[in-house]
Image (cartoon, rainbow, N blue to C red):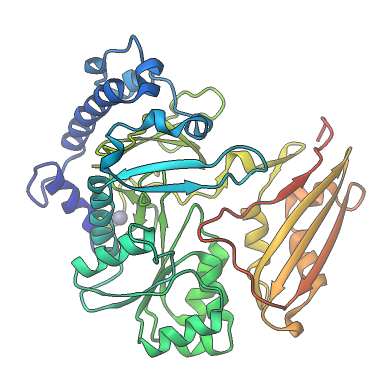
Length: 442
Ligand SMILES: [Zn+2]
């Protein structure tokens, strides 16, 4: 098993020779950078100047000291992004606008300087070495048309490491994307899970078996069922990447052990906190991911709440690195539906629906009227003959949260169609749409 290339990359970034990184040295570096980031933010960002008034950056020398600083909430970014910007607008190279996934709220806008973009390219260069070698031909199925877009930065990172990037963009016509992979002899692909799944399940998708050796799925969470289908159909190895625009597009990537994500720990400091009390939780306990940027200059973020739930895996990764491993993210806090003591979320539905033959994607809507609910599932399949609503119903009813309600309080309405393949926008988050609210005792 190969140690993640991120370790020696991080060692070099903090001024150490390859093979000599220790957690102590990394921690010392991280707190030095946190103090610097907080001081800079208090000096240059009007948001942090008032938010952190009275704090002395020089005193932040431990996790406990950092935990005394207030969180940065996503809504604060939405309200007035310009108050976060620390460099002159002339030095901003790119602004990414993120539409809110809810029905209300203005979009988030994230600002990047050229230096910030360079950090991301560097991470892509070394992060991709976990699965790609020089000379490999890598199909990029992420937005890549605009300079500075995620796929464009990935292209540059791949070129630097000696691989051959094949920019394609998000998949709108899966059969066409497969043809392109065949013509261009792609040996690896990077994209969002449902797009790769749609390619693998096309009729011509089977022809990529043996040709595509490695796939990187990039999004906020990756359904395990999709990874399994890809591995079965193509005989490839599937790796996951976790990152958000706020993190600087890249966050963490799996190594050859494919256990948890290793983070770009020279650029990001990760905390896991209790989502209700806000207190840091012990290692190994699940909680909300909170991060502080260590190297960003355009729009540094301090203790930013991601709303994503995960935990740091105790013990060392089998690859042997001293870097932390974070369990793949499965849930977003805001998207957990409470049913009595139980919870229901899109990932729960994903694991039941994606293994069904021919399923490409689906929409889910939960409509509440008092204690009663109707769950509408609109399945999208490759061929009309794949449509089997009864099979979907049986699969869904193995979920404890649905069993709890069915049939007295829950109606399941499943429709299937195999028409045009409509793709979720770029990296839009998939979620259960809720109408109405469950009664208090649910
Ligand atoms: Zn590892």
